[in-house]
Amino acid sequence: MGCFDGWLICSDYDNTLTANCDMRTDGILPEENLAAIRAFRQEGGRFVICSGRTAPGVMRLDPLLSADGFIIANNGSVLYEKATDRVLRVIPVKDWMEVLDEALRVGTGSIEKYGVFRLNGAQFFARGDDPFRPEPGDDENDPVTKLVFLHDGEEQALAMWRSVEARFGGKYRYNRAYCDDLEILDSASGKGTLALELKQRLGARMLVGVGDYENDLDLLAAADLSFAPSTALESVRRAADVVLDAETGGIFPALVAYLRRQAEA
Image (cartoon, rainbow, N blue to C red; front, side, top):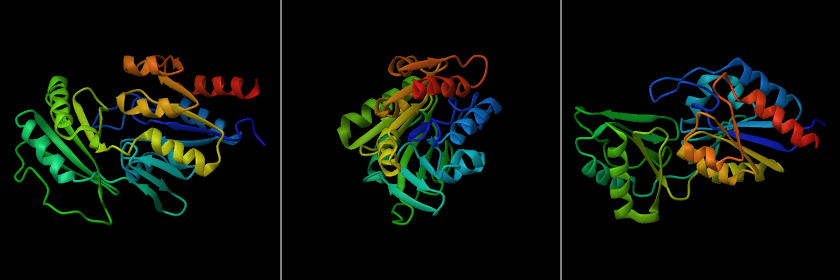
């Protein structure tokens, strides 16, 4: 028995576990963070990545990130179990071609590129590509789980959000993982939704959520205890129970030390 038995950390990857990430790079993964996570696991804790990346994309980065056997991928629309190579839950985007057509219509001229994310990968289209859209039709074995649009600027991304939401209302979930992007998922999806499902599956008694941007807010809200790095978006820092200094390196040594004090209290 370890002091972290029954504790589950669900953490964002880009700019939370790592630093200096953008949509084109994997960023820097501090060794201090990995050492702290190893110590947490050695004392009975479970650690799971909640990422906008696909499950194969997360596993490519470091074996530790899926060491406890699960990944919440595609920003909370896929729950994957590594040990059995099974997708335990997938939440497809309903009528994704319809919402894609509307997004392309209102985003004409401002979209730098966009991605159609499925279970096992993503297809990207850049400005000037011909064609600029995928062929119609769904693959039931590899459904679309989110659409991601990268714009020339933040205002253009927000304008698309307002326009698409005005047409479709609550049918979809709208996220931003960076200031100039917009992600569209099914309304039933979310990092927090799948983190709570995983908490139940594992019989965990304490869910710890860690994130830095708008797409992490539902994870922080679902958690029993939530953390954000000091470099997080202001709204995320306000939503977190604890904000940790990220200026001098990884936040996980301080995070695990905080959890230890709570567990041993």
